[in-house]
Image (cartoon, rainbow, N blue to C red; front, side, top):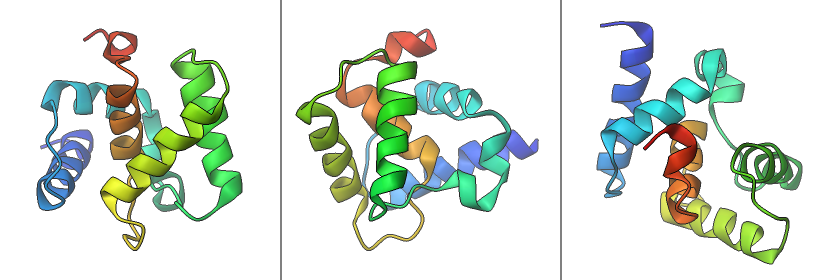
Length: 113
């Protein structure tokens, strides 16, 4: 199994443990879109309590990657995803957060789905 496949399996297991349903193909596509950052401990996760980090998610992912307009709906969606994963969960994997946000806004097409 490649390192990439190991990461996808790790994220799949994480979602299973959290009781979150997911589309394995989309999760794999989102993970692939993150490139080498998934192999770096700090870059692999999102801090749900760091306002600067959440702003980065909003600007770089929601607005740039998904092409969404800035507004309160973006902040609400990020908060919803953080709540679904669990605020106390230390490992909010970026691939899982991005996957859930892409689903939230029906932007699977960005990943060819």
